[in-house]
Image (cartoon, rainbow, N blue to C red; front, side, top):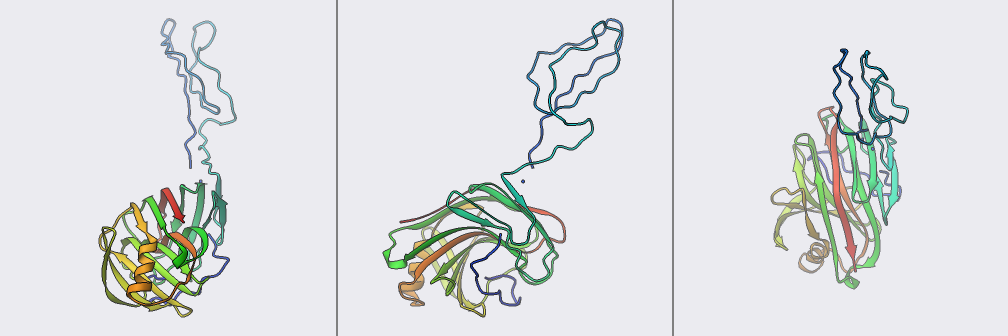
Length: 286
């Protein structure tokens, strides 16, 4: 796993790579005091759980309006809800053929909450100190298990919302031969972060230009494509990147494409909570 320049190399990939706030609608009925002063509005259906604010009135019958139901008390804060939410270091949730991980694996991590609505809508609330080293790799993972030369297509599309500051990058983490070879593709970079290894040239593929880095994380070789120019949405032709490493650079020969992951390597957020959100995502192979 790549991360801050000069950080300690990431531990090897393991099978246990571990990895919710909607507003409650409120309705209010306000009765104006006075013997003949009363304002009526068009009837509306009441939401489940709402608040009433009113003053006494001499008008017979008290006040009009739709009946509220639920248990929300005046002055209370609505409780957000997600399909899944956890602040566990190794939290994970499987849905739609993917597994989503919180994965706070790095030394010195603080707090991070994984929330999931679906494979196409999930994210983390992360609060990390701005110290060296990757603190987490919140990601969505898809198992493939097909030899590279047997694939005719391997693509992935993403759309995300990222914070404006902090030290982190959005990246694909692609594993070959189990955890034998790591290939990364960085799509958005913020702050003082950089991949492992040294640059070995640039390549233009499918309309994007990448700088390629070659290194080793202490357990396996790591090859990192860093996109020239950030993007928060797009499509990456994963097979073309892998074929470039195989056929042009000669780094491997017909390995198994084991896993495609995508998410954020987060090193620091200045000890304030930052929100990282996936708005849409897919990964396909054939």
